[in-house]
Amino acid sequence: MTDCSVVVKPWSELTTAELYSILKLRTDVFFVEQKVDEEELDYRDLEPSTIHYWIEDVTSQAVAYLRVLHDPTPTHLDANHIVGRVVVRADHRGEGLAQQLMTRALADFAGMPMLLHAQEYIAPLYAKFGFEPFGAVYIEAGIPHISMYLAAA
Image 1 (cartoon, rainbow, N blue to C red):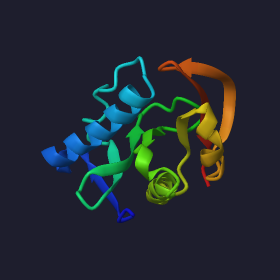
Image 2 (spheres, rainbow, N blue to C red):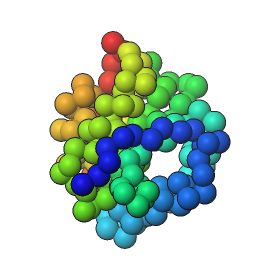
Image 3 (cartoon, rainbow, N blue to C red):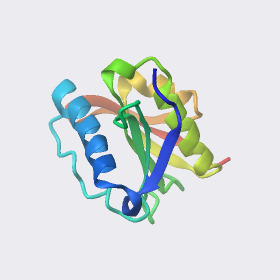
Image 4 (cartoon, helix red, strand yellow):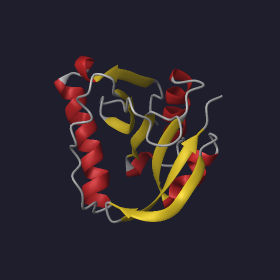
């Protein structure tokens, strides 16, 4: 079982061990497991406004992660915060960790409109938080995705 406290830090506060753990998790799931065919390191992690959220196991390894990006120019309607890189290690799926990360991130950005690009099969998770799909399904990183929007409260 996982200690379910969510760690929240901007880039400037990440230790090298935390960064390695986060990147290892994202690489293991997106590249090794899902065979993603696009670049993982996009420089968005480094932006001072990017907030990293994760949950660690007892060995201090990230087992669930997401990030919230800030774009000064809204990309859809009035949303300039984007939830992305939501990932849970295979052996911790079904424990509600993604929901815990989403709950914390949405609390931190309460009332603000947000966007995300959901893998199509996981869109129902985001719908539980009030995200609504818009546009057609598209292929991103070789996987069907749907864009989703959360209106301001």
